[in-house]
Length: 63
Image (cartoon, rainbow, N blue to C red; front, side, top):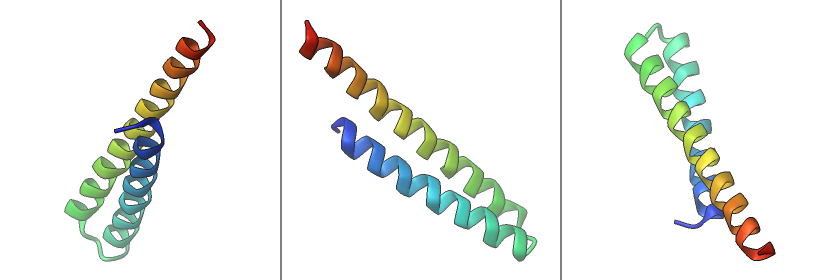
């Protein structure tokens, strides 16, 4: 995956995770809340991975 697709996938996972957490909170479903938190963390990690790839590419391009 490229840096842009990592960041886009990460954003999608982060938003989906937040929605799951909110629905879990409203319905008192702790399992759904936990899954949402996990998915949000996964999304944040994917976005960070994309930013790292982009930074690495920028360094190589400048060399």
